[in-house]
Image (spheres, rainbow, N blue to C red):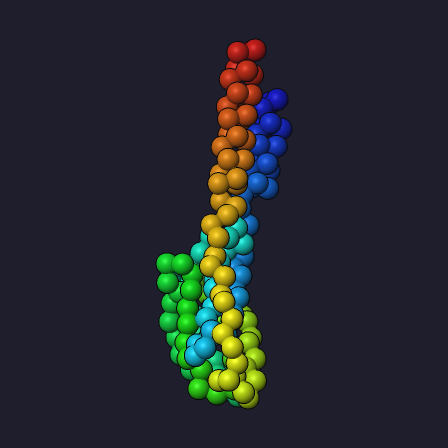
Length: 147
């Protein structure tokens, strides 16, 4: 009977410490292309994620489709100014919609350096979960020895 509360606390702790994965998208102009960087909330590149691109004034029909590369990057060369819309979807419930506005003189603008995604946040989360599992094992062994 005394193990039930311990089990509930353990499950709640493990669920609370599990990584939260939203998807983040950054778009930058790098003449002559728009470059998108897709990462999960922990900084892990969103590789192989579906990307749909919608041209200005054509919000219903997909202008171009593709996938991110192993670094979570995608690129395309726009043919006109206006608000370009991007829908990134990994097919597992992580979806993000972004808009990037290109001014009429976008072809004359200087390139912007696109930051590469950093692989951060995964190891600390794994460490916390491993530590929680170790604590649970020690507590269970201690409780069994008392019985």
